[in-house]
Length: 149
Image (cartoon, rainbow, N blue to C red; front, top):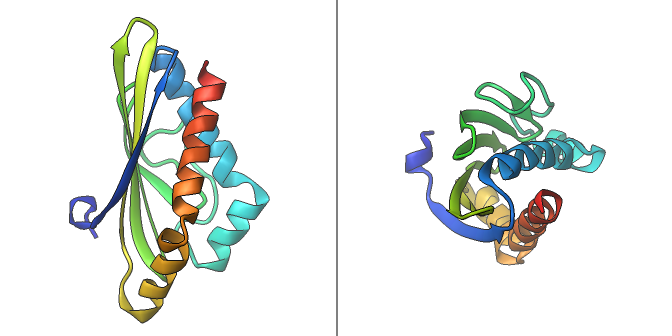
């Protein structure tokens, strides 16, 4: 499924007191570390994610993988596009980075996902409806901000 055809879920943003290059480096490192932890990697295997292991070039670049995601586009300092799928969903995370002033950047994280069938609908309620996705995205952006500053 093409990313543009995936339904929009939400977008979260944070302003970071660091330049875009520093935030870019921290974004890749944080995603790699967060999604490769045993719990996250185990969850990716449990739901049948493709891919379910980290591979490819580091820092993250087109073709790299982390559990649950494949990097489909990487423009250093500007945009990182991750795509994945499992038994209950096809999804994408799109990170956009822009300089908003001297030593200040805005990082936006857009989520797109399709949840086909009854099982997909139940999974959407579990992940999106309970606020779990919201909490996870806020924690992720907060960690990137903290580590970048």
